[in-house]
Amino acid sequence: MSAPAVHHPVYTGDDGTLLDVAEAIATEWAALGVRGSFLARNIDTGARLGFDADEPTPLASVVKVPLALVVLDRIASGELDPAHPVTVDPAGSSVGPTGLAAFRYPATVAVGDLLLQMLSVSDNAAADALLDLVPVPEVDARLRAWGCDGVRVRHRMNHLYECAAGAAGNDFSLALELAVRDERTGRHTIETLDPARANAGSAAALVRLLERVWRDEIAVPAATAELRRLMGHQVFTQRLASELRADTLRWSGKTGTFLHLRHEIGVVEADSGHRVAMAALTRADRRAGLAPDIDLAIGVAGREAFEVLRR
Amino acid sequence: MDLLAHLEAYAATADEASFSRAADRLGIAQPLLSRRIKTLEEHFGGLLFDRSRRQIATTELGVQLLPYARDVLDRAQRLRQVARSARRSRAHAVGVPADCAPAALARALRAGTEHGVTLGMHELPPAERVSGLTDGSLACALVRAAPEQASLRLPLGLASAPGPGDADGGSSRRAVHLEELRPRRGRAAGPAGPPPLLLLTEDRVPCFEDRLARAAARAGLPGSRIRPAGPAATALAETLAGRALLVCPEPFARQHGAHWAPLADRSLHRGYDVRAAPGRNGTGDPPAWLAAQLASAVGAVPARGGGPEPGPGGEDLPARLAACG
Image (tube, rainbow over all chains, first blue to last red; front, top):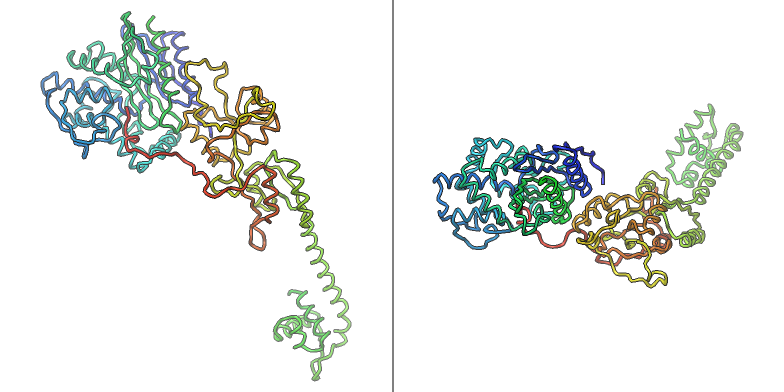
């Protein structure tokens, strides 16, 4: 129960009101034992609020968004056929709790539907099947060519599982223990938790990416439109979406969950026309697999940010 | 030169008028006895025995020094006796946790007197009871151990503000599961938020704190819900005012009129072993009568076999280690 050194977040906010909201969010997160970064930005006015938005963080499944954009760009340019069938065999596919990763028998799915699987239910096997078609270095190079400097793709999805199982031998609580402990020392036993070696990104870079996707300022409009459509199909609603659920609001997002990491990025669009892109990247100091209070606190942050930024 | 051993040889030889009989009486070999006499003679600068005849005789010097030698031996003997009885009558310091039942401690003291041992009870925090055994300041102590390995077990529970049904003592004893302490969604929490769990000094032992932190995390409680209680009186006041839950054993809660319910997870209860300081004669086992008295002083019960196993239940699916959503 030794208290780690108090962290003082670096706040972002265009005026006092926005700074107050950013500070309230950081305080509430800290009370729950959550460290991390948050950034929300009105896509049309540019008004923003957040804290520690430039801190690079391992992305977990959030990386599936830039991956999808690169694949969709290939499809739009005709290099890849969305109807191309891919057979995913559980004997050699990636580990995961949902989608093809949880299948017990081989299945053949078209590239376009692998994208849907990957973004709707965060299917690790679908993501790695797409990385078979567009290898990791090419995804990373494409993102750099687009100027997405704050987002780095370095490994396949299954590498997360391999590193955790390699360090903890299939013992979930031990892996969690290592993750939480290493957060204090800064030396990561599980390689995929080290921002310098993992797929990593900052809240600022991810919000910038979402803004460009929603404003058609990256890749080609056919690719960005499809990415927006697919992100609207996500089934998980426990995080940023949790407090933004109304018929008048539309949430398009992607979560990322790995050991003590709980992330989500996405865009809320209101019937009123207001659009706010946001990214919440968190690391908990708690050895718990499920922490609905943390998910809810992330959701509350999203709603607070949206309501103050839509004005 | 071990003067006492040499004087003993001298006195015995004078008594027996024979080196061999003196050696027998002292239980040593005759050459060793002869050597001691010789060394002593060199030390005093003159012969103590006349060895020229068949029967040895004490010399004039030997006769002259003998009463003084006996005096030294007598005094040494008395010194040993006093030391022995002082050791027997010295109070045995016993390390016990804070908040033991005074009547039970009194019974332990009386039982000590019956067994010819003066006991002294010292209320100490858990770490000091262990270090006291090692540095010799305690003869015996109740030390904390994991409940599934300990010989004594004391259920821990949560003390809370007394409810309407508590006055008659017939309150429900339903066990508390940690996940029940999560705040309820959709219901306005009090202005102070969910009540913290306060830990008494007695429960601030690393192995217990770590176990509780892990169990609380798995039950969905943030680590900040668990806090040190500080002084017991203020912690009780907070508890009775309904602003905190105090982690404590039942007698402590009842004594102060608080409602109490046991923690359902028995691996979070207190375990105690009665341990004696590693004595000069080896064994570190405390007498059984003392162990029983100390157990009743803390309100512990002897552990039944097959105690609860700590740690998370359920199997680990590999998918939990992958990125999940």
